[in-house]
Length: 171
Image 1 (spheres, rainbow, N blue to C red):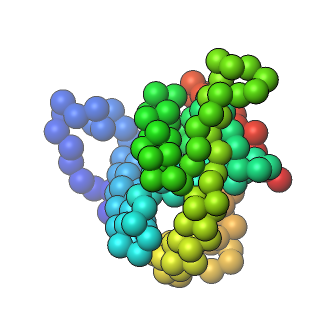
Image 2 (image 1 turned 45 degrees about the horizontal axis):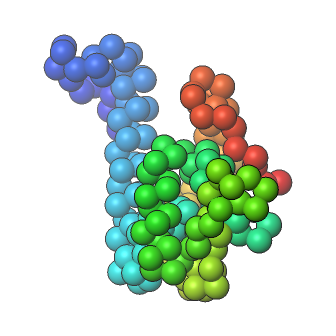
Image 3 (image 1 turned 90 degrees about the horizontal axis):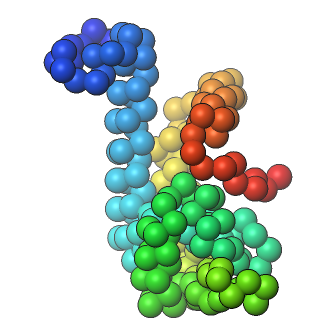
């Protein structure tokens, strides 16, 4: 792919070097298209959105499938209000439950329901099949290692320079 493309001088991307522009546009095209394809597949096959799937997967990172709205927001990188509103919509579909924390009544907890667990179990094989066909199919093991290292390095930089705290990662 060529990095020889022009952007209007008033575009903020005109401030990027040719290499930066190429990498940034490649990333933006990829992440936008991947999110579209994953959302389409999940909706068609399982009647859930990619946002629903993101919440369900995030909740599995805690024992018992329960997190505070704040912790869930940090985990998936959403604003707290967006997380709360989305969880309420998911609760209406019985994918999650929302309740006050027994330790601190000011904290709202989001928990996977049995329906949420089963929806995630049903959606996962098709989702992973799509991810393999779209993302991993043409990468050899060396390319996959290089890609993983690069993405992990960028993620660490985002955590270091971003505004959200690092979520508690699973081993």
